[in-house]
Length: 115
Image 1: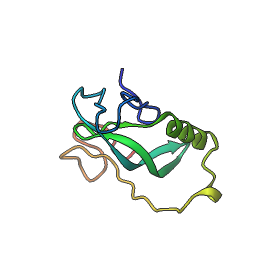
Image 2: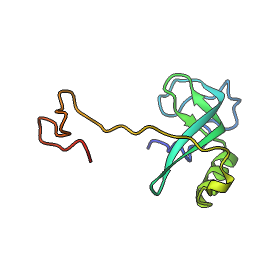
Image 3: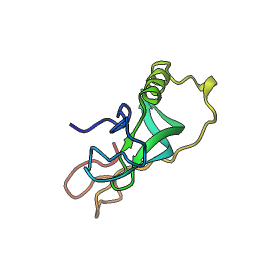
């Protein structure tokens, strides 16, 4: 069962990060990194920066210590008040289009890509 990036515990928690191996790809070595993640909170896109994680150097899977996962859960439970945000950013939004899609927003298969 794949682990959620939000709640993935550290693989081989007793091992040092240099010794820990990835449970997802069964071979990658985990290295300590500081990462960012984006998630949806209702209709708002939220970015959380500077999260300590162990990241698989082969497949990119992220693992969080239990304490880090708990803080992320508490942040999410608090609703991400804009008054506590470190900063606000503008994010461009793109519509998915299949290759060969018509400019009208409907692709040749009849699927409306403008929704």
